[in-house]
Image 1 (cartoon, rainbow, N blue to C red):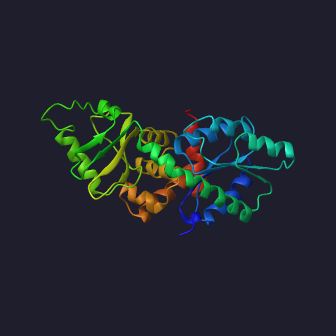
Image 2 (cartoon, rainbow, N blue to C red; image 1 turned 120 degrees about the horizontal axis):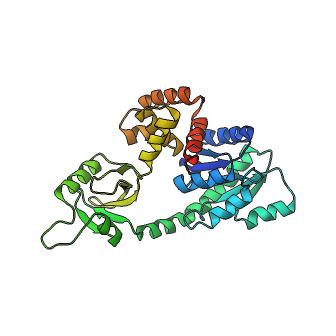
Image 3 (spheres, helix red, strand yellow; image 1 turned 45 degrees about the vertical axis):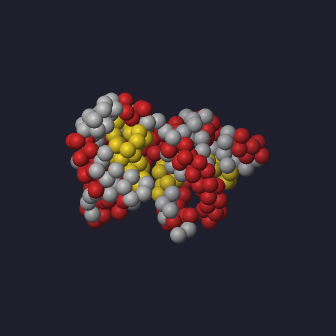
Length: 304
C-alpha cells in the first residue's frame, strides 16, 4: 500500500468553488479524504475539531487570509505540526517568502496541476509521518489516559482520570465499579475502532471514553476526551432538519470517514449508510460527500 492509499485527511481552504472542486476531485481520485473550508477562520475551526493530516491553504481570501490563518495554526501547540502548503496566483518572491515565514512547508502557484500537487503532498506527508511516532509517544504520557483488560478492569491511569472517575484506591475495593467494568468489557468485545467513543453514566456529560489501541492480547489503551459529537449531531438535526441517524452519518462524513468505516462505527451496512447519505444530500441540497461535508463544517462553524 502506498502512502497515498492510507486515507489521509486533507483540509482544502479556498474561497473559490472551482478551485475547491478541482482539488477535491483530484484528491478523492487518489483515495484521500477531503475536508473543505471557505476562509481562514473556518479552517482554524475545522483543524481544531478534526485535526487533518495536511492543509492546502489559499493565500488570498476574505476575512482572514491564508498567511494569518497559518500563523494562528502554528501558534497552537496541538496544530503546529500539521504541514501547510500554500496555493496562490501570486508568484512573486515576496509572497513566497511570506508564506514560508508564516509556517508553510511548500508553495504552489495557480492554476494547480494535480499531478504536481499530489507529488509534493506525498513528500510532505511522508515527512510528517516521521514525527508522528514522537507525537504518539507524547500522547502516551498525556493527562487523560487509562489502560484496562478484557474484563474492563482498570490496570493503570493518570491522576486526572482517577479524579474524573472518582477512583479512591480504597483497600479491597476495585478502582472501577462492577457496572463500569462490565460496560467497558462489552464495548471492547465489539472491537471498537480507533477514536470510537462510548458514554459512561458516571462521567460528566461533556466527557466520553475513546478507544486508542490494543496493547498486547489483553490490554487496551483508552482516553477520556470531550463529547462534542452529540452536540454536533443535535445541531445537524435542528439546523438541517435531519433524523438522528442522518445526523450521525453526516457527522462522520465531515470527519472524513468512508461508508465502510461509518458502517463499522454505527454497526450498520455500507449500503444502509449510503441510503441515509442519499437522504442527507436531498435534504441539504447537495450532490456529493465533499459538498455535504462543507455544509456540515459551515454549520458547525456558525456556533463558534
